[in-house]
Image (cartoon, rainbow, N blue to C red; front, side, top):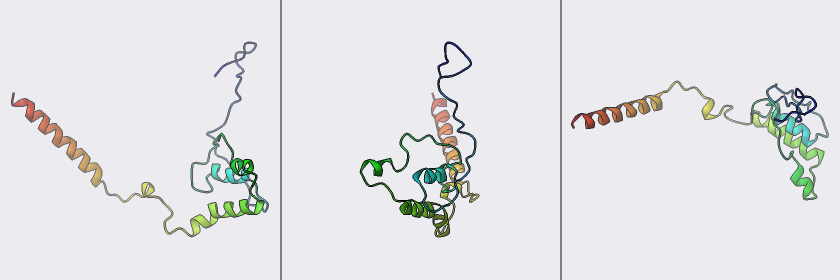
Length: 128
């Protein structure tokens, strides 16, 4: 990060507070794509942690560039499906990585395999 020559304590790039949790925008009629992105950044959709994510191209720019911008009704539907309906209609709320089944078979198998390789390696070199 560069600093200004007249004030070395002031940076050229403004500070971005990316580690502070974000509040979710209110669910209203006539939503915007910024509110949908706010839902994602706040963690309401369950896609990511609730911190600011500086995306290079905001949601909806492709549709706008193509001449078919999303209507507020379409965005309302997307916000509803991404937050409430997504979690109510799913059979399982957590992904496989989040479940704690208590089974450590893979870990024990891996450690055992490494131990076996070490024993064979040491045994092979002790014969010489």
